[in-house]
Length: 492
Image 1: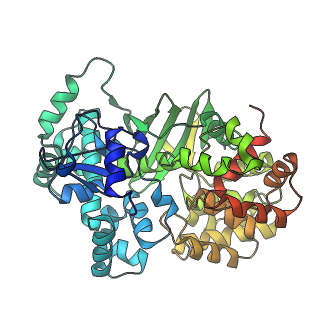
Image 2: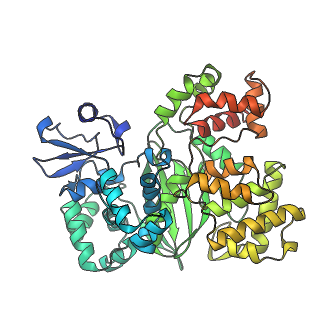
């Protein structure tokens, strides 16, 4: 990972610049702790400070997490969405729980590396191997469950992905210098209203948490985007809250996300707490919470064509995906029809083929159909022209077989190539899927009608060719430029 040089890192730490939180971690040899750059503690002497690209690297070097600034809850580094190399893909896959579900061998297979090669590469690039990176994520999940639930520690250990209670206890002590019992006692001693809560429904356990981000955040733009595309029984926007169902590895879930001051208030209803870390990662992806909006805004505002749009709505985010296969299907539904028409068709598909929740939460009653269900469905249940139905079923078959990967950890070029090989899928669909499912910050649907209308409203030359030429000035943030152009057509 490319972090600033040590002197720049130290200056950022001296000024307590929160923009660098998550970009790198500060380890202090005189105290044995590591912090985020914005930690409010007294600035240590330069000779006592080292800098690490990941929390896992600091932990591997023997440092424990600061209990004051809580570096494990920093926003993630925006570099992982920028980087399309093996290290970037590995970080995205680890965050999505691949090591916990499939082990290091499974992660290596997905990246077409041997386990030994992968360990060596990640150790060199990130300061820790795949097990160390996954261990850091488990420690964060464990802390979250310890502090926000009253679950017995054996259940916390299992839910966080530890193989044994002893491993859980040892890791918590090593990373936080507290036992699980001491950590929970500290949480219970906080002033009223600060401790998060957890409660159970007949089939869900509910965890409430705060998801940090780097300001500014165009929350109104995010809610407008999702609100215009909600599919009944699957998702909804109510006031300032976005809710939707999730298909997770161990069972279904429902998430509620409400923008607040410096954080997103999240409520997660999970059938199995082993899915907590992945659900948190999906929530962060949905609202693009690991972005660096100041860097994006500065780059786009340097173009006179976009400067007014950036001033109008600073902190634009690229709406992400709860499930890549779902976004791909919905993108095909949206080809050459209006957003409203695609939404109605998606609702009919969810009604006929969606998987009902055993315990509905309000109006949210279904999961989006799995690739397997779509691949095997009677075409008569797909209310659309036969050619488009065939495209969706071909896409679903490839997703079900694993022939095409549409997660944030996928090889973006390979995913685009495989999408374009499917009859009925063109460049617009491939770029839209890359933008939302693959978290590609440079994806740009140049032929999109909303993009072209937005550019026309700004007085730009008409046509997709002109749009592509203009977009060269916006790299590597073209996906954010598209959000500004779409937002231009939505009154504030």
